[in-house]
Length: 285
Image 1 (spheres, rainbow, N blue to C red):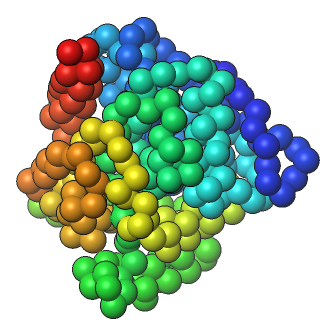
Image 2: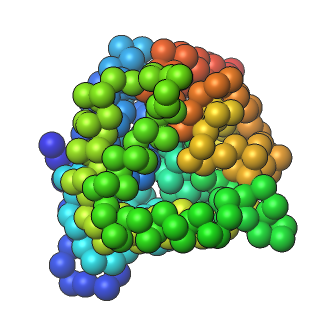
């Protein structure tokens, strides 16, 4: 494991961001979802490296092996953490991949840092552009449902994670796309997170409206979402993103749940590698 130190906006104590950097070739930076850690990308890392890419994963502050500060869980700060990592590694021509909450960091990185160093973007099961239901976002998630989830996290975070994992991967009486040990592993990864970070990041992705920022993504963008996603429904998110991002290609996985990085991993890895290869090849000519 390696670390970089970044500034905390409300403390003199620096925040340590844990990252892994493996492989050689085109740099691909993977941003994990909530409430997990960089370990969620296990099956993507190996395939991307074998395809000739350099793959960087990192733990968002408050999650995994990164520091657990009391503040800094807004998207501005999280995008600044991302910039610090890209600058530290001096990466160029990056493919920036954001899953779920991580999609917000991708979008905010373009609006706040002009997409510096990034050549391609991927939004997977992403919360962008706006998750919350409102008068001008009628297909969003009801505020009452968000409030109920927040209360459940505060009351018994581990019990919430237990049920959340089943919905996350589309587990029910008729379908069991992941094993019980994997569900336990997912719960363990999420339970390691700071309780404060878990709640604050939940608010960040639930209430941040990115609609005015989407057009600032000025690189080729791949959007992937499952149409059976019960955590982040595609109607107010990826379907809308496809209308707002200038140069995008959207792929909908039939019957796929939110956690398609596991349930559809072979297809996802193939789509990622093809997108990276096609974009790199086209930039040469």
